[in-house]
Image (cartoon, rainbow, N blue to C red; front, side, top):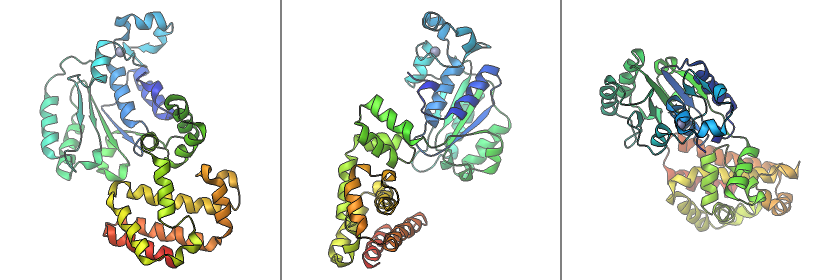
Length: 349
Ligand SMILES: [Zn+2]
């Protein structure tokens, strides 16, 4: 069921949005921030649907929902029905007045914003409220950002702009100040685990494990569930030599460099791989104090055993080495060189 109810956690954003709908005072521009995969896009779609839902016309709501009058204020349904013509058109991506702007390549360019301005100069085709959803708003180059700013200063008729970004720091402050900012938080580990278990049929233990490693992101959790994440994690721990951190020092340089090379092949999974390696080292530390707090819970026995051979200082050093590599990568250092250096250092200290 699409709509606000399908969004996991995010009680505060949902409350703010439904209050706008209930009161009928909808700002011209909204800004949703939060990490990838916490429901920002779904909330934008639910909001677009709620602004245009004609649920009553389908009859469905009247039969199923006795509280319709509570849900409908000023002609707007707070929870969209997902079934009426506008809702279905929005869901299938065929509504002419729900406009999506996404980066083309790395950037959202000024030409895209100019086209948008031309469209918005016309009246909406059929929507009560036209909704423009700008995904990855941080990808707007300065020229595009300034063009958008002009539009925010003179908002078009019957139109709501929803900007989606990871954090406000990535946007022009003048844009942020003209939007109603709604912050989406990472999803609680328990909520993610429950969702994986109940909706995706994931076995309870595995669901907990994935939820613990997904950093509060539903998208990440689902990707981990789809791909054979556990096998990949096992390979990472073993091939990096971190399954025996204390013996890493005797590992031949050739093996260390071969692993570094493999790690660099897939740049997209590299940052996650580093997080996984850190989580393993973290578990080796945490289990010394409280074994039930380990993230890689399916490996608890091995963690307890390995941890005994590893002094705390050695483990902390290794985490520090991975963190240094992460910082260097963020600062655009050469990927291959950084990872090779990281592996050599991991084996040294
Ligand atoms: Zn509807």
